[in-house]
Image (tube, rainbow, N blue to C red; front, side):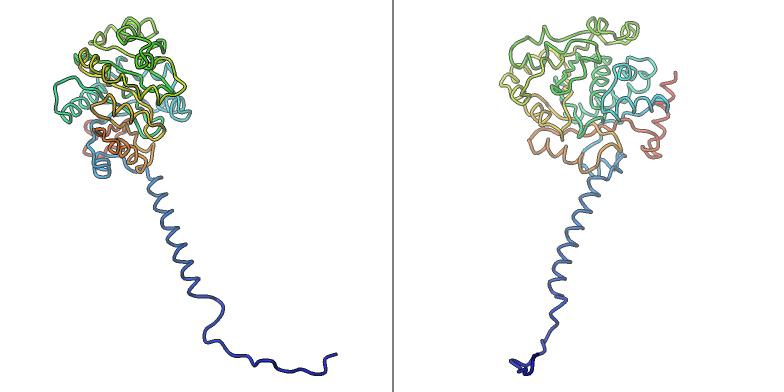
Length: 342
């Protein structure tokens, strides 16, 4: 029992409240608000897939749109194509071959878009000499391989001696499309295990590979096209692509061909396309499927090329529908559709 209490020190009132600490709370709130704002901006930039028209691309990217490849597939066919190609991010050989411009259903309309693409590229480069191009994309499943193959076919159709090279040593596709063996090919040529003249394939090889004989024979200019497959897939792709043999190879190829097209891996996944652009290319064409990848990713892909002091030529809008082209371009889209039905 306590019987005596003494006051040691009388309580003194504080001039300001101890809690809550308003200054600390304001600082924490400001930092947290700034962090949230940065995250929101980042997400909006990287999830925004609204860039889909010529004006959108040229305004945001500060690059020209070199071509518009229209989507002229039927809705049913399109659904199957999307299922087989985009959702699995792989193609089926039959699905891929069905949309090559050697197919009469598509040739009369879509081929003009590739001619326009080539005209714009040549105008951009301002040369009549042999040129080499890297065709790539920011991400997977944007149609860069289909664009490269059809662009090569269209160029051969117009009379240009064309070489299509599968430079995707990690995930080659062109050999399967043409039904040919992967090797010998580019990797074997760069490591001096094969000569490109012996490795390059032509129309007779495509027919043996399973492409429709009648379609190929009806396709004017197929004799102008040769294909160099990827070759033996190396363990270290970067070492092969960093070969000192590029200069001699490109001198040979440019003396034989008017146009050399490299189908390269996506820019944001691998450094391969940048290396090829530096060693062997006069310019890079970026294939973009509207609504497939964020605008920020597209911009970063183009920046990788320019930061490497390679020539970024422009963007090709792929698989564009009328609703995505804007009213001023609907006329051309309808023309493509009408031509395709003839």
